[in-house]
Length: 311
Ligand code: R5P
Image (cartoon, rainbow, N blue to C red):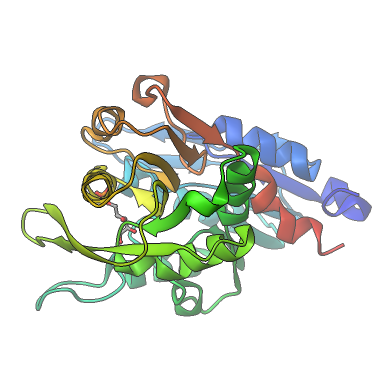
């Protein structure tokens, strides 16, 4: 049965103009019609967002990743929510494959803002009533919202992908490229029945952003699967890879949920000599940013599962 089949005609999906492929997959998975907002950019950069469909009395699902250009996408999203609300929708559920600013969840240095808290307020104030979010950066993020948030994860999809590789799991360590990812590697190891895990201690200079892998805890076997939530510049993955090779790893795989892929990340990852780099389509990866050994996995079914299981 598809989402809301009994009230199918009452549901409209507004897709992400920056990720039409994932939007279509989500609409297909739910069995609902897909529409896009009408977005205009004025000469001074201001946005105008309109819904052209009749949303009166309807339940609306909005898909949006806050990918590059982050701030424009964020504003486009809240304007769309406001437009839908003002046009008479009954309920708005947001599927947010990638939430920007989630690493900025506290004051790192005196005098800084807490951008994530501001972004959450914007989303809630606009009128979203419920959110499904993929692999939030920290376990506490859903609790920072006042509205219900259901976190879903790509880790089971990655675990299945590893199973399909038919590796000798006795030779495999699941590795986090930093200490913040320990919960994630334990989850993956449990799913695969692997006991060997490791976390690399990474130091990032807050001024320059330069990352250095300094030491590790846990065990490094000859095949390492590096698991991370976000790849932005790619430096964290490359530093971890270099460190793992210096400490006995011979074959490296990468599994990362959110392919932010800023600056020279694609070139860096290409130079990393990974057997494979698995990333999801939580953010659209344009052809120009794709590189050899990259495999893109779809998260459409993971995102729709909480809606489908409600029936
Ligand atoms: C950090 O805590 C995250 O889990 C990622 O490791 C980080 O955001 C990756 O950033 P970059 O690719 O710029 O090193």
